[in-house]
Image (cartoon, rainbow, N blue to C red; front, top):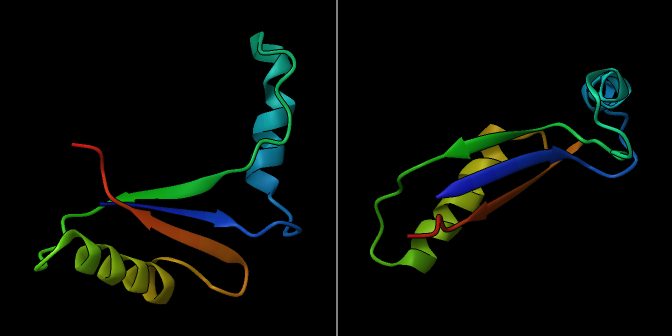
Length: 79
């Protein structure tokens, strides 16, 4: 299971902005709209993939993210 947590649109992302400003000095031109986030890899025991996904999404929304300023999306990890 993978959970991605990112800042909601419209919320300032100072980490992403700092990365974006540094990219030209490192030779990476033409990269814009950099947004930083968090990535979690989980193993969830459940009776079905759908149940595991539902549990991971609930966990992401209640523990891994701040729902006021962040979006959290759980997805199954490719096999």
